[in-house]
Image (tube, rainbow, N blue to C red):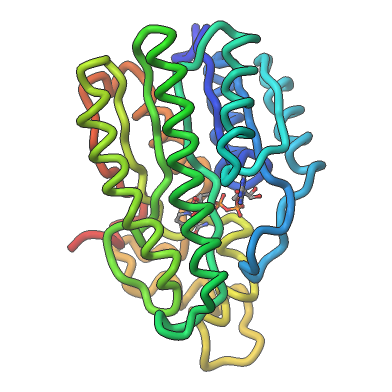
Length: 278
Ligand SMILES: NC(=O)c1ccc[n+]([C@@H]2O[C@H](COP(=O)([O-])OP(=O)(O)OC[C@H]3O[C@@H](n4cnc5c(N)ncnc54)[C@H](O)[C@@H]3O)[C@@H](O)[C@H]2O)c1
């Protein structure tokens, strides 16, 4: 059976590991040409290990193992020219871009809003907001030139729709994506280009499964175990899960990027076990 994205080209930021890698593999399995890029270096001080060039190369290998074409590049979403160069190469090699996934992001070490250091606040907004805007901008520009048609999927967070203590820069950045997506969706709709936001709850990736997050969730226990983190994280989630898997987010991304969602634009799609239900 032909995949849903046969002959389509997808560009994904933050593709070295975690959700970005999962999106890359799922698109590859569905027949897309997959272009993945990542900074593969320390950005800010998120409090967990960064991805590596080897991680990104492994994503490329997994895409090829799924039988898909594509390439990977090291590029920083904060660098508009670098992001544009990735999209230009995708257009040159595959004739256009059909889907752009603004997935790259960082979180911050826990601190109350009035105690966050200036450079931390600016770096989180630079990566999560300006970086996502760069992907959307280069993506829509390529889609307009080539069709116009296409789909942009931005990865927000439960932090796009509610306040969360101790991660004020992250929450601010993810709220900003709601405005970006809603505005671009209105502007691009008449050209057949859709723009949507997925808002994951906790996801089982290095961004969540680390000591810094344990310190935020389990501040009263010294050196908490994974089990203690899981119990605390599941509290207040209607489906009583500590986190979803990366592939759960990928399935939402693929749906929004597919023709099955042809009239879905400007939407916010939570994948979170119900944690964002008001
Ligand atoms: N893990 C969670 O609990 C969770 C929950 C909600 C939303 N999210 C969002 O999901 C997205 C993916 O995160 P993840 O869970 O896969 O975490 P992750 O840390 O495993 O992956 C994020 C990737 O983004 C890359 N990246 C960071 N800064 C970059 C930059 N300046 N340029 C290019 N790449 C950069 C990292 O190197 C990394 O490979 C992020 O936007 C994140 O905010 C994550």
